[in-house]
Length: 136
Image (cartoon, rainbow, N blue to C red; front, top):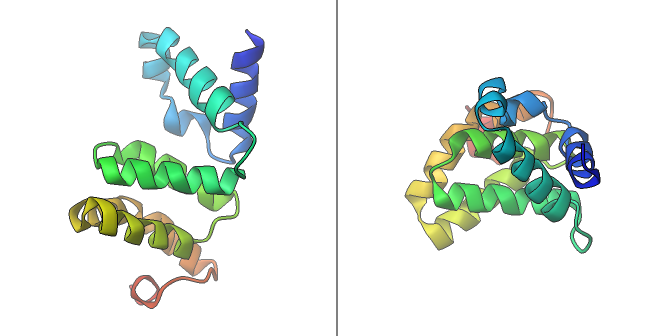
C-alpha cells in the first residue's frame, strides 16, 4: 500500500461515512486500479489539501455533484459525510439554493430529493433547518 493510498484512505475513513457506501465491493473487485486512483486523487490529493476546511470542501463537492445532476449516490455519500463532519442540514439546503441559481432548479430539486431523508434525519435530531424541510 503506497503512502498516498494510505493518506487517502485515512481521509476517506476520517469523514465519518462508511467506505463501503462510496466504494462497493463489486467496484473494488472489478476495477481495483480505478478505486486506487479514486482514493489517492480525490481523498489524498484534493480533500486533504490545505487552504479550505473540510466542511467547506464537502459543501463544494455537494454543490458540484448537485449541479452535474448525474451522480445521486455520490451526492448522498458526500452529504452524509458533511453532516457527520458537522455541517447542518440547513447549510446543505442553502448549497442547493446556490445550485438552483447557477445551474437550474431541476438540478437543485433532484439533489434535494436525493438527500431529503438525510436532511430529515438531521431535523429529527434537533438540527436547525429551513421551515419547508422541518414541516415535512
